[in-house]
Length: 124
Image 1 (spheres, rainbow, N blue to C red):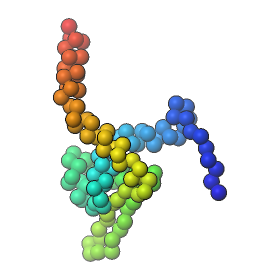
Image 2: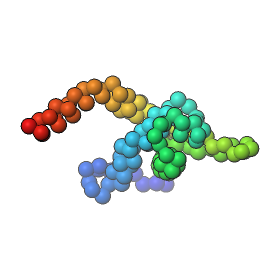
Image 3: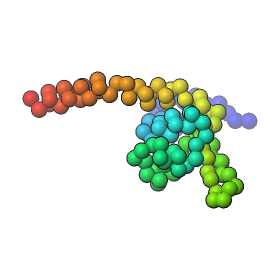
Image 4: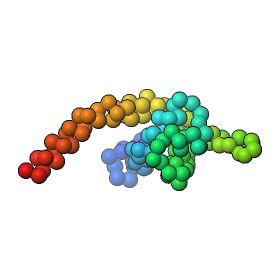
């Protein structure tokens, strides 16, 4: 039987901070958002998430798998194919991840305007 703990993310020793750090990673968010649409093969993920290297995709998927958010399934085909999907725990994040990732898309003009105004004020 596992013991239930109370975690406090404001405490510097809280392990939830590590998870937050991993979830705040742009690659993790993009992977989770892409997997919301259903299972995806490794190479499809790599094509869909432009700019991610094979190494970074592999590392991100392993971390997400270790945290119980992503399931990796090896299919006995020739050649072997590997497919990734969200676990039940990962599915509990889909609404949050979708809102966050697409918030950035929808607000980029305002963000760019704020950055430009800030940079101009700093130069004055």
